[in-house]
Image: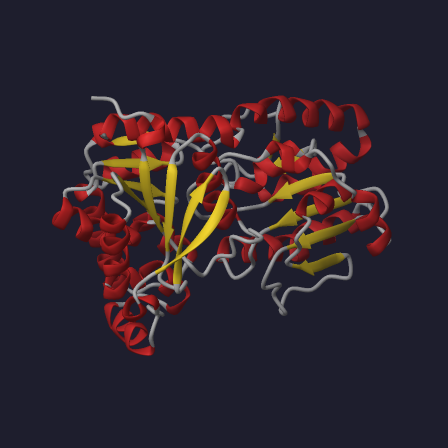
Length: 401
C-alpha cells in the first residue's frame, strides 16, 4: 500500500556540530536542503541531534523548535565518551561522527521522537547515526533508511590517521548498520560499488546524488568581493573546510605547486581560499584565506576560474556543483569529480596535479573556452536541483512504506 506524501512523517537523525542556520559547508548544506525540500514536498520532517537541547519539526521549510523532557534534553559528547572512543581506536577528529555508538541519550531521543510524533520512517545521515535509528527500529519496527555520505570503511583511512583497531571498528559498524537498514542511499556509483565490496545486498542500495539550490546562486555580488580584496583578472577560487585533510592537502598543493609554477610562467593570479579553519602552516603571498563566509555565491562570482586539486576522500563534492551553478569554468582532478558524470573538455577540464598550471594558463588565455566550459556546466547542473533530488527520496520512502 502506497503512502501519500502528506502522510509521511520522517525522523532524520544526524550531526549537531554542523551549522544549519546558516549552512557553511558541504554536509550542513546537504542536511539543510534535504530537510527543507522534503518539507516543501509535503513530508513532515523531525530533525534530531545529540548536541541540541531541542528537536525540530519542519513544515513548509519552517523550522519549529520542540522540547524534550527535561531529563533527556542534554546529551553532549562527554569526556568519558571521548575516552571510550579513543580506546576503540577512533581518532578525535571523527568523534562527531562516532559518538552515537555510545551516546545512549541520543538513542533515547530518537526513540522519544519516533513514538511521540508517530513517525513512519527514520533516516540516519552518516553511518554511525544508524545505531540509534536501528535501536528504535528493534523496539518499534519503524523502518530505517541510511544515507551514506561516504563509505567510511574506505574514506576514513584516506583522510584520517586511524589505527588498525579503529579501522576494524569502523568497518564492523558500517557493515552492521547497512545490514540492519531497510534501504541504503549511496551518493555515487563508486560508493555503491564500495558497499558491494563490503558484502552489502545490492538490492538495498539506491543512488541519489547531492543537489544544489540553484536559486541561491542567481543573485550575486562578486564586484563587492573583488573590491574588498583588490582582485583582478585572473582570480582563482577553491573552498572547503580545511580541518578536513583532503581540503587541507588541496590548498597546500595550490600554495606549494600550482602558484609557484604559474609565477614561473609569468602569470599573475591570486587564489581565494574560502572556508573555515584556514591552516596557519600553508602560506603564499597570492593565497587569500578568507575564513568562513555567509555569502559564498558572491565569492565564487568574484573569481574567474575554479580549481579542485583534490586527491582523496569519497562521496560527492558539492563545491563542483556550486561552481557549475555560478557559471565558472572548473579544473579538477578525476577524484574531485567522482560521482559526477561530466565529460572532460565539455563541462569541465580534468587534469593531474602536475597538469594544473598548464590547464589554468590555457583557460586564462582563451575567453571562448572559459565561456563554453562554464555554459555547458551550467546546463548540466540543472538536473541537480534539490527539488528534483528530494523527489527521489520520496520515491524511496514509498518503496519502504
